[in-house]
Length: 441
Image (cartoon, rainbow, N blue to C red; front, side, top):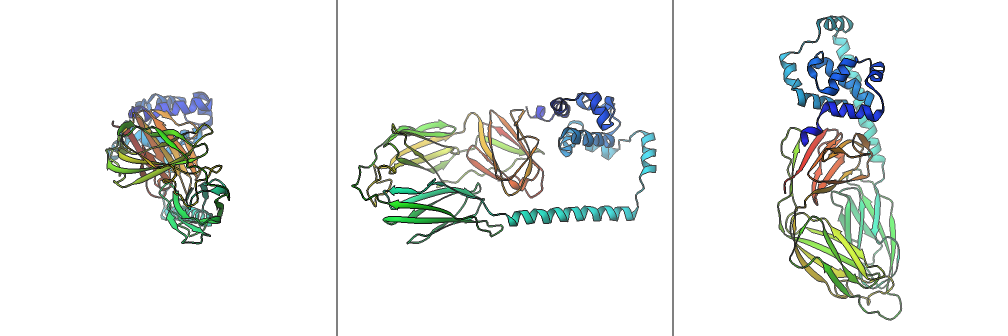
């Protein structure tokens, strides 16, 4: 299946047909003769004049179709072994060699001017990138609580949100200690704050570790206690998962609680399992996978509907996990002041074994800088993503039966997570990296 992804002729023909032009029109626009265009699309490289001219055709044709020329040349080399033939010597037609020799004279002055020009362009691009990066204010979004809370029945609250990866998130405005936490590789964070009865005005600020710039301050007001009589603690019934269940893929936690109650789910890894996939680079060399170690914690939450039903999903890497499911108080019916979510109705525990799923799921996060992306799932390019430059701040959802191919034109900006396992960034700044992810389960 991977070979079909790298058919140069199919890539060219598909792009030309998507552009809505025929071979004769391409010849008029690019000045490449029809016989050579047809040979490229058929994969009949014997009809082409030689590796040097063929690469020139691919660059012109790729730019005309809006494709990455270097990627097309990579496919040509993989399919024909062009690199080896170039070392042996694949001479172009003699007449063309003579004409090019007369048209182009290589002199020391010309070499120096070319090097100087390239250096100026690279330096200007570097300065532009640094200016944009260091002048940008880091993003900060507080997801929970989504707004101010007029009545809360607990003296603790878990604040959750997203920001730039590895940013330092600081809480201010509390009468007790103001805690800090560092966001993970995807920019997610959660932090428990201690409240006091009455009004608590909480300020949240994120500091980017690279630029040391602070985000805009996000403020939330949480009022502990409503002044009324204490209400009964919310009840909790967990329908799924069953204790000691064996589950493939994402874990769904569902059941019933008091209407409007927030149900918190915390998963702690007991025993790590083997990943259900492998990763290799373009040279077919394995890419290291580092599953989380025992003791790792993941969490989520859900709010019970008017009929009390709730449902939440956790994507957990393979292994044995202990789930703690605890009800909190609803805004309409707060728990007694000073009570913790676990104490309000009790925490229920489930132990589950997560096996690799029957498919591949995950995300691609593009952060800090834009990156050219090629994403092919089960042999099909991802519409709207593959072949495009993706701006920073974009999250791409992945789902495939057996294979995913990811090519990044600026590998440092691209972070990949598969089946709950973070693979980290794909490479260094400006590097062009390609990964082949294959389900092994």
